[in-house]
Image (cartoon, rainbow, N blue to C red; front, side, top):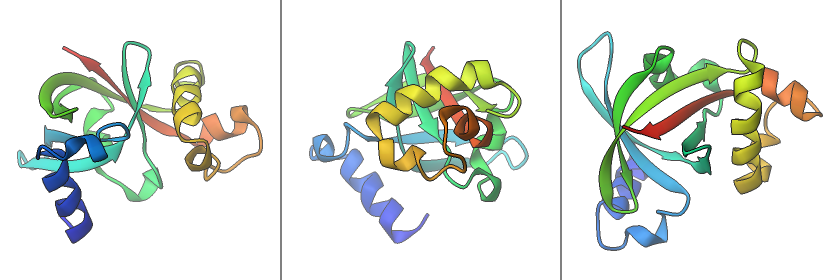
Amino acid sequence: MGFANAVVEKILGSPAHPMLSGSTVLIRYTGNRTGNQYTLPVQYADAHHGLVVMVGEAESKTWWRNFTEIGQMQVLLRGTWTPMTAHALRGEDEPDAVTPLLRSYAARFPKVTKTLAGDTLEERVREAVVVWLRPV
């Protein structure tokens, strides 16, 4: 974990967590191939009875690939570790499922979703990878 991630992890795990808890959570999961436990901070938005995380630069990231089938993780949300299911969805494969999730994320972080290729929501959905987190 890099220095910035370590600082965010310390803040989210401390009484000062309200500084970041409205936009950032920690996720903790076990890697499918390695069996190692990983913890990393991600930005989230509330969405459809759970949370949504947009994976920025998805092709260069690997963590979300552990959830192409529904999996389990722990989420440090507002100071409390909560068990959740996680499912990674690619817009090019499941546009009908990704569209409402990406809309929820775009409502919270409009500038971030504009980093996806495309001018319209439909074009951006095709480029998006989102992870849908729901309480167990």
